[in-house]
Amino acid sequence: MAPTLFLDFDGVLHPYDVYLVNGKAVRPGGGLFVYAPLVVEALAPHPTVKIVLSTSWVSAIGFEESRSRLPVELQRRVVGATDQATARTRHSQIAHYVRQHGLIRWLAVDDDTEGWPVEQRKNLVRTPRAMGLAYPDAQRELADKLALLTTQA
Ligand SMILES: [Mg+2]
Image (cartoon, rainbow, N blue to C red; front, side):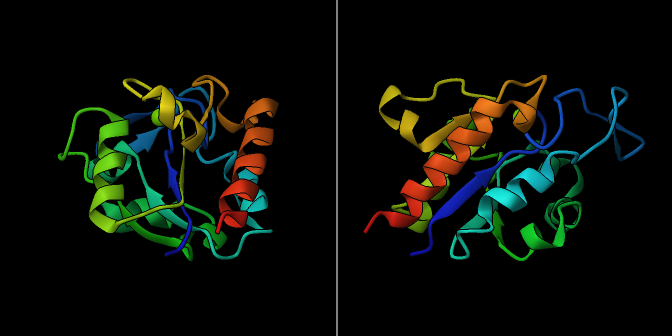
């Protein structure tokens, strides 16, 4: 079973201020996916890690379109998406996917931690929504937790 990274977009790969205008994602504050290269870099030493999209983008513009916005190095790792209709909170959506697919080794990077259980804090890299992965502590935590994820038996 491949180690899996649940990847949120808004508040992670760019700051959170993204709006859907005429079916297009727009960020008045600046660029989209500006921090995606940091995920490419963090995953580079870990070729076995797969990505599951865990973002409202999938329900807004669809799975294929959402995946296509990622750098190709990340696109290749994407194996699925959580179903936002399965539960209200991000954690519950992820927990549903984990159960459904029998995942043992998984990690989420997200700015939305509502209802996240303390005992699963080790499975989460929380990013500040205004900075996303530009926050150096979050970059370090992602690198550290990916290393743990891929060395677990
Ligand atoms: Mg988010």
